[in-house]
Image 1 (cartoon, one colour):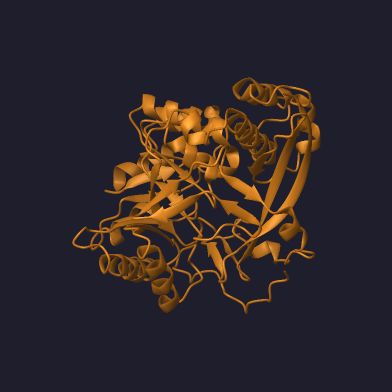
Image 2 (cartoon, one colour):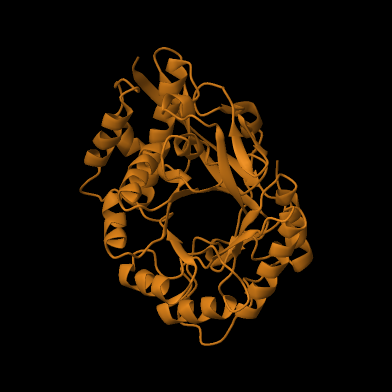
Length: 393
């Protein structure tokens, strides 16, 4: 079997409401989801989700190769880009191709990826994550009620700008989950998305912890600040979670050495091989690992095969437009199916019908760091929520 070519598609995740974090929001609730389809000479096609703008440069590293040699091809792609620095969009491209390679390998073996990787239990514990900072309290309650009806009892709330608002929202989500918990105390996490200084983080979380029990606080300071993350971890009761924006073991190593992270995260867009290697590194430090991202199909499969998986993020309850995924959400867990590969079916016709993808004001999205981030003396409201725009489909 040989790799013969690739195709790129772009679909959307339509949340039906604004989504975002302390840095900004997608006001119309529609987010682009790039897909790469990797073709072979035996008619087996693999799908990988995530941005891949550098694919023209990277594809020659795997063209004509046997796609089943996934680990070797992953390292080959890293070597192919070592001068440019395999981070950011380069690492995202490697991750999308890596996921497609694993999809092909499992399909060729006639097995779901979780089984091929040696997983035993198809159930993957999940937590609810609504990217909810722009929602009113009524909308927030309705959103987490939908998660709770699927059995989720742990939730991550976006915040970081106003401690009083964060307390109200966390208490509201806690109470919604408690209505369904049958006596089990709900778990709560807060995600600040790198919006604080070290002192701000300790002070903000300390105020919350006077009345709330937080499981973890995510990205309280900048992702690479090993000393700062360690200081925050020492100054609060909650665990510190980080890693979704780190790329490559070389970026994790200083944080682990400094004791700067308690829950090690990886993003779905960085691929399966990256997750497996980070999980092994975290396991060597007796730390749990937790995948992050929308439709993290590849990492859900991989999570079944590592000894230190804690919980995986569940964002939208629906997959992106034109995708069918072979897993359900029941009793607070993803339940993986038996379809060979990642279990993703791509409806190219449905995706092709999305003639014009909705535009956003890029300066106010979660991907753009606000000018005053980390330099706010006073509490600020959540990112402003303009009127919704119609979705073109």
